[in-house]
Amino acid sequence: MKRADQKKLLRTFTGQVTAALLSRAKDWPESWDGHELRELVLYAFQYERTSLMRESRKRRKDCLNDIIVNNLY
Image (cartoon, rainbow, N blue to C red; front, side, top):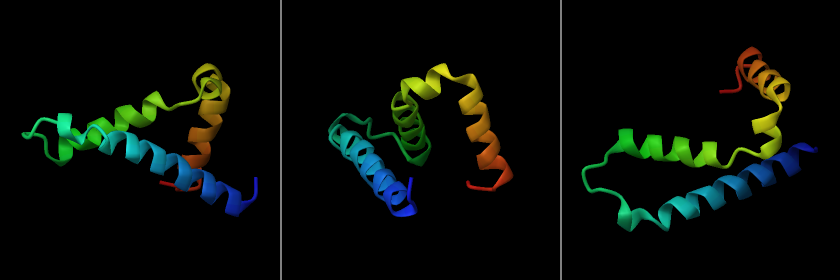
């Protein structure tokens, strides 16, 4: 996939997840601060994991290795 297409896909995907989370903002407990909101984001992105990545242990492992070795995050 070309770099421009990767960036477009990531912007679209994260925008959709952000929009979904913000649409439920009225339901968040007022006591929540950055800690709970980070957990909410974590769960939202885990829920969005594709079936391919859920089912392919090798692909997940290879991806994580690339992230760590290339210091991608």
